[in-house]
Amino acid sequence: MQIILLQDIKGIGKKFDVKEIKDGYARNFLLPRGLIKIADEKSTKELEIKKASHVKREEKLKALLESAAKDLSERKFVFSLNVGKKGETFGSITKEDIKERICSKIDQLNSREKEIEIKIEKPLKTLGEHQIEINLGKGVKSQIKIKIEPLS
Image (cartoon, rainbow, N blue to C red; front, side, top):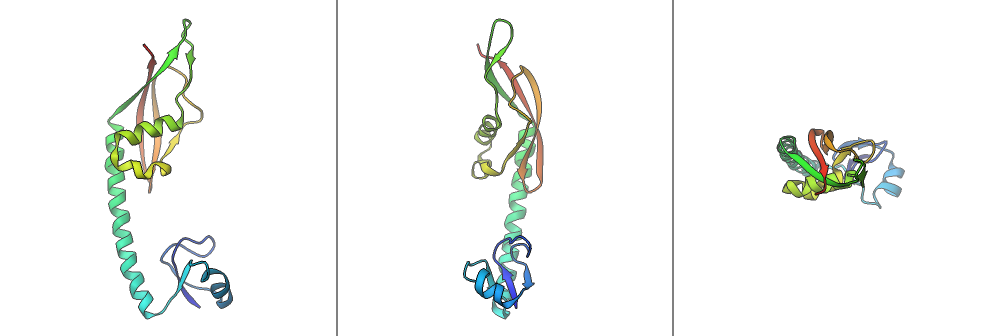
């Protein structure tokens, strides 16, 4: 049976792919869950229209993310930590702190906050500047500068 995937299905294919699968699997499992549509002439034409609009939307989103990545790489994010008499820091800067600050600076990223990936091994605890890689999704990556200074 020829079907159109309405979302990514592991082991079968990606959203909008046209695939040939066994009738029983399609009728008894995929179709009742709304994961597929049976491929006929009408649904194939609809698929082409949806696929074109989806591709346009993805390209627009990627361009927006690239512009945000460029903007982020030109900024420096400053955080403050309490510091003891001997120079030891109290507290740390976590991935969530960084993500929140990034999203507050770039309006377009607020709706994509869950997809932003901050690449640090452990929370930052040392004063000074740090270079951190972030992944905004859709293959768009950027380097950002974070400065940690003592709280006055």
